[in-house]
Length: 124
Image (cartoon, rainbow, N blue to C red; front, side, top):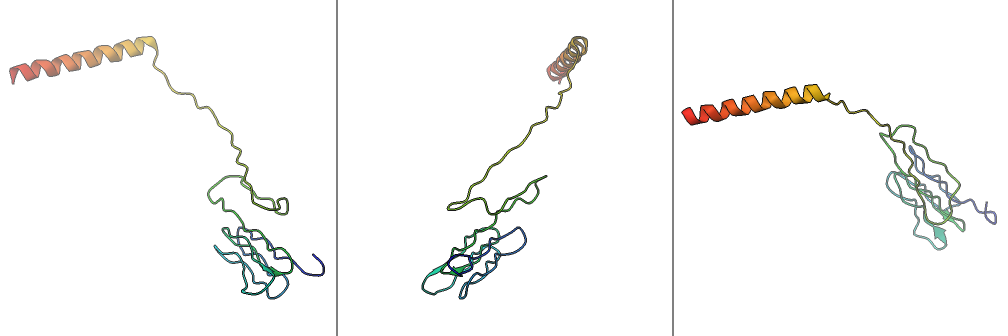
């Protein structure tokens, strides 16, 4: 609470932020809450927008991370502009290789096939 006024709530992955003190308006999908009134702080935009509030801060909008594994957000840790941190790990996958003998055999087969194609072209 800020001086007896309730700030707007933050948006989440599934809902807009709650409206704060009237005439604040709740956030919704793609839009932060707003009110065309004096001294109302609008909610931040995002996947779901934050709620607006009279005489208190507007809530922040949410991000979206559909299709990611083990993704998460943490609310209540950032004031001002939003921020994002992306971390990932890489898994090295072994690439199959041909042994020297198999590679030589493959080269010989391709050479024979290439030569046979050249002979056919001369005759045709």
